[in-house]
Image (cartoon, helix red, strand yellow):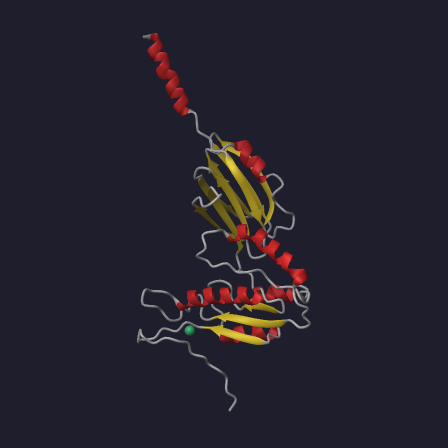
Length: 288
Ligand SMILES: [Zn+2]
């Protein structure tokens, strides 16, 4: 009788103990356009993100995680040159909840999402920290010193549909690029091509039969084109927009003029009423 009661008691004690998930890895990739924080674990993480103003902070609560593994995972990961994260603290908020506080350098627009395990990666909780105003790639170029000749400019743009986080591909990109550089041809002039994805923001452009918006198609094509141009040692490509926002036509041309572009390519994906029609249309400015 007594033995039975004791058994039940110890069973319920065991069940009440929170199973805390150990963090596999934490990665932080700072970049001018956004900083990506990835928390990798064997099981999906219960989380909550809170944005606080004055001063700007992001609070990430992780439920039922092993506190030391979070603390060790974040230790020394924030770079002082990170454009968005100033400081990072990890604390025990309440039983079963580990709180990560990110002190921010500027106002941000965070995005949080999860990625299912793939290949060697486990469950990933991804926090992307974007600036409130999307970075103007052309303005950033003008503020930077001229790139060295013979060096590929910019980084390759990944497709948005890619499941792999962009940030995780960065180290490999760098490696293959720096390995390629010394063998590259000698270049004495850099050709600048401005790639202009048509439409954007409140101007969706044409609409496909299944509801595809032209503004999204043009951006995807423009990013692909840019990555193709950027691997050429004597070329660099710049996008007039690298996000879903509208730039008036004069603004697009002005951007091309400011960087003294050799070529301005505006991308459109027009819809047509007859589905059997194939091909592309080219518009050229005629001065006659
Ligand atoms: Zn169009």
